[in-house]
Length: 130
Picture 1 (tube, rainbow, N blue to C red):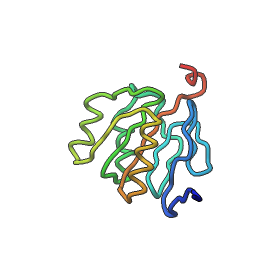
Picture 2 (picture 1 turned 180 degrees about the vertical axis):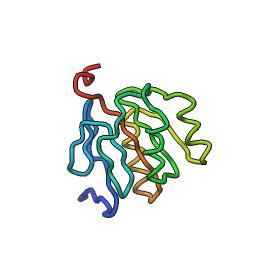
Picture 3 (picture 1 turned 45 degrees about the vertical axis):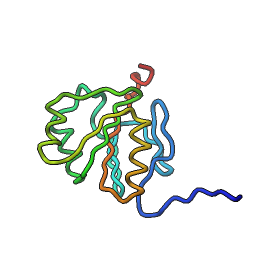
Picture 4 (picture 1 turned 90 degrees about the vertical axis):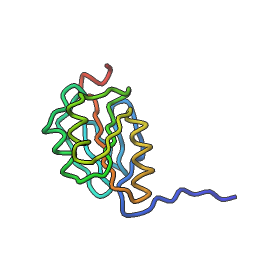
């Protein structure tokens, strides 16, 4: 039997998740970013879950998701209830998971043609070992 991996064209996908970086298609990113099937927003100014605020939420909502996957780093960490409510009040689902789980879920949903946005928090510089 001959096996081959076929990636559908037309959406951005995650190839690899590491401790301090994530590879989107062939581009390795080492700072927090937002990813929609048709758009990559680099340098999302969030260094940790505790700093998520209305401004960070607006940047995510600007991509018009039906569902948001928040990759909170190497471990699952929940943002404030107020941050989560900013999505739910607008009818946008939000799920929080570690980066590896968020990447797998994003690839699956984007491959199905869903309007999903993944928001990945990556450690900055000296925080990578934390």
